[in-house]
Image (tube, rainbow, N blue to C red; front, side):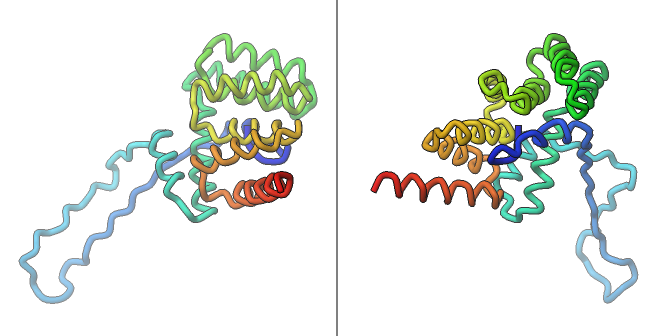
Length: 211
């Protein structure tokens, strides 16, 4: 799950069709320009050299270092897209059918499709997270929290699920727990300005209650 103060529904399903593509550009000096040099020539990289896709670990490591909000958002979207890719055409299709049914308010069908995906691949983080989001939009908060806990058991760095948990805790009035969840979120995604503002506001509110 992802997005705050109960704007959580867009967190997962909308990212299931995103694809991450990496690109590498190499610059080499122009030939025949300037005086002769004794330096070793730069090795040219063939244009068709395959580029190894970034893993979730790569993306999250960059996300933790990135301080530019827009660049960080691109990394976050890429990580979410990777988490939403099962490597199984059947499961991916079930995920898409579930998202479409949910968008059309056919919640029973949406749950059925996502349940089938989970049965086929119980360790697929994306399916658990999508079901958590669906349960939240249906008002089934306890079931949503249960699915979020499963997501975080499989992938503790899943910032979308952490944000979902923080939102539900806020809705329930558990501000101390919500603050801890948002702080955990920022450990993974420190450049998120909106989350920074939420943490600052919650901290002020809690400090005022303790004085």
